[in-house]
Length: 458
Ligand code: S3P
Image 1 (cartoon, protein in one colour):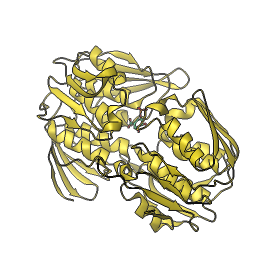
Image 2: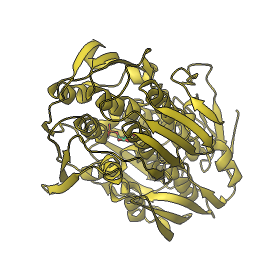
Image 3: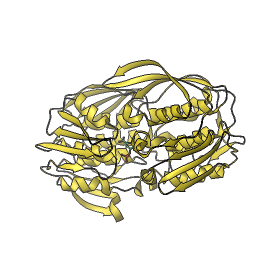
Image 4: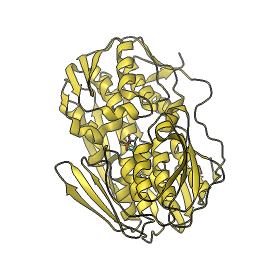
C-alpha cells in the first residue's frame, strides 16, 4: 500500500462476516520475530505531526486498523498524510490553531485511543467535529475525556446517553489552561487534556495518582514543547505543559509494541521446549508490568540487546519455555500492564497455583468488558477462575484442557490471548471472530505460524 490517505478512504472496521480461528497444540516454537509498531506511540506520532507545520517522517508506524483510522482523521483535520512504504509515512501538519473542520464524522472504528486523543486535539480548536465508531466503541465511556475538555471551554453539541458516541464536539476559541486530577488512571484522559492544552495560553497541568504511560509527554518534548514532570505521592506524577509551543517537524521512529509482543512471549513460555527472540520491543517502565509479573512467576526472559529510538529504549528479548507458579499481582501495577491481563490470565492457567490479579475495574471498559470476557473464555476451556470484586483469581493447574469456543466481543486482545492458549492446551481453542486482530496486530497468525504455531481455520 502506497499513496495518499484521504479522510474518506474505506475503513475496515470488521463489521462484515465473522472469521473464526482455531489454535492447536503446537510443537516447540522457535526463531526470531520483529514486533509491529507500538499502537499508543503510532496514534501520537500522527496526531502530534498534525499539529506541526511542515513534513514529518514516521518510520515503523503500526499499520493496524486503529492507527489507519487516526491517519484518516488527521487528513480530515487538514494534514497531508502520505504512505511511502511499509511503516513509512510522511505527514505534513496543519499546525496548532490551523485545523480544518472535517466535513464528515470522524470514524475511529474500534479505536478508543484515537477517539479520545483526537477529541483533545479538536477541543483546542474553534472547529466542530463529529466522532463515531463501531458497536464496541459506541459502548465505551467518553465522559471521562469530555468532562475536562468542557472545563477547558469545549462544548458537546450532541452525544448519546452517558457521553457515548456518536458525539459532536465544538472546540474552544481560546482554550482555558486547567489543573486537572484524573479520576481514573488513564493515559488517554491525560493525553486528551495535554493535547488540548497545546492550544491554550498558559500552563496546563495534569495530576495522576498512579502514573500511566508517558508517550504523549515524551513525544511532545521530542517535538520541542516545554513539559515538566515531577513525582506526585508514591505512585503518581504531575505534568505541566506550557501552551502554544512551536512544534517543529520531526523524524519519528516507532518502537515495537510490548502489548503485541506479549502474545508470542506467553506462547513461548507455555509451549514446552520453545525459545524465541522477540526483536524491537519498547522498554518503558510504565509499560513493563507484564514482564515484571511473568519473571516473578518464574519466566525465563532475558534482554539480549538494547538501543534507543527517539527518546524510548528498545530491547530484544529471549524467552524460553518455563515452569510458572501462581502469584499475587498488586493493584498498583495495573496501569503498567492494563492491556496485558487477558494474556496474563492465559499464562496463569498454565502456572501451578493461584494467581490473583488485583484492581481490574478499568478492564470493564475496554474494547469489551474484558474481566467478564476473560473469565468466560477461561471457563469455556476448563480453567477454574473467579471474579471477586475487581480481582480476577485463576486457579492454575500447570495445564489447560481447552476445547472451548471463545466469544471475543469485537476485542482483539481476547482473540489473540485465547489463540495463544490453544497452542499449549490439550484440545484446540477456537475464537468466534478474529477479524479485530487486525486493529493492532495485522499478520498475527502468519507470524505465529512462522515460529511453529498451528493457527488456522476450524
Ligand atoms: C492507551 C491507554 C490505555 C490502554 C490503551 C492505550 C493509550 O487506556 O488500555 O490500549 O495509548 O493512551 P486508558 O487510558 O483508558 O487506560
